[in-house]
Amino acid sequence: MHASSRAAMEASREALKAQTGGALSRSRADALLSLADELFAVAHLLDAQRSLRRAVSDASVSPEDRAGLVRRLLSSKVSPSTLEVLETVARQRWSRPLDLVEATETLAIEAALDAAEARGELDGVEDELFRFSRIVAADDDLGRILGDRSAPREGKAALLDRLLAGKVSPVTERLVRNSLTSSHVHNAENEIERLSTMAARRRGRSVAHVVSAVPLTATQERRLVVTLERLYGRTMGLQVQVDPEVLGGLVIRVDDEVIDGSIAHRLEAAGRRLAG
Image: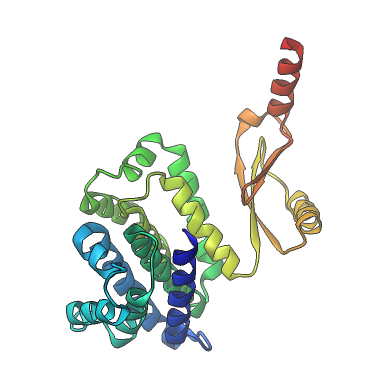
């Protein structure tokens, strides 16, 4: 996002916090899930209707008129809390119409994670998202279908319902189904990983994605966490994937930084030196 859209996102996030802030008790979980559902539904509407998202983000129209448009269209279809958030979104200045769509989706994700926290399921949601990302990574056909932006949204949603319904938390199911049916998502594995990272950050930690030739023992994982926390200066969680092709050693990715200590990487580097 450009600077104006980043500022707009922060203002919109504050409006969401005004509706979801305070103690996240289990009694509020259903209301938070409804808020997330409505925000996702509006994001899909904006995603599908180019003229509408252009009208709601049109900088030549006054902020109050844009908010009024949203109010007229949606006041009978969403709750007052959701409408308040959406009016704030409409008042902001967005660099491009698609930023408005992505911002609304992000707010929906954050509301869903609030619901997970209220339900005491944030740890489980993060784990379920990671495990589903591994399923997608291991199945080329599934990844291709879910990453096909031209595929009908209804077909993707039906496929995801068959894969996830009754097997994961309602929050995980909502996050995956709504995020992977957005037309701008072209890599399903990366999108699920982004959701998992957002859940981890909600728990106040970063995530190290680790690839190992063999499963790590509990002791090895603890030592690796201590080392990474000392290196990065923050609380760290691990998501470990076993891949025999690395031969030995570890490949570690934290955000955009990759530490490749695999034997396969060393052999490749040695081969390049010999060829040179």
